[in-house]
Image 1 (cartoon, helix red, strand yellow):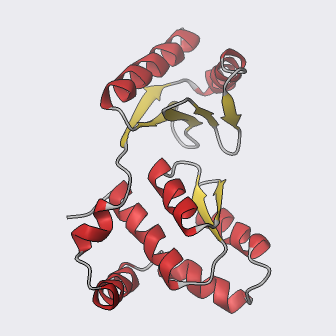
Image 2: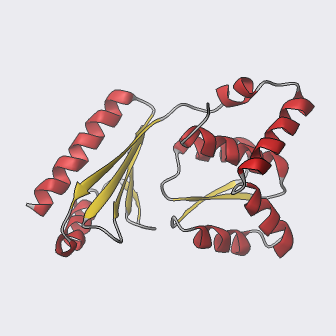
Length: 193
């Protein structure tokens, strides 16, 4: 069974293999696996906000060489599980590969999502402190704060509807993932006081 980030990676693979897109637009929470798939296909890799509206609008801006209909068709493939299944079967038949052969090529990363209590009035303070303490690292402020480390990344994303921060962490090393997840949870809890 393929689920979670494995399924997202498979969707990216299918979309790039089956369309004329010159870019792959993903939410800021997307796995590093997907970035490496985009690199393998030689397309631009773009992170954007997590809403489907933002993803589609970014495709419309980026894919000027395609018609709006071609962009919509390519984008919609990734949203339809039946289409993904059909394209995967087609790829497997045309290349004489098993699904396990395709998925085996995807790099393996470990990912964790935590929810840390954070009162509404403390969210700004938490985000400001995270930014100030990580100025020396590669950072993106697309939605929340995404920090890149040598072999891992983390995203601290204030929840829109609940008094909490979501913390996404990913690494190719499980021990590094545990260490980073605990460190960030502890920092947020300290900032909240």
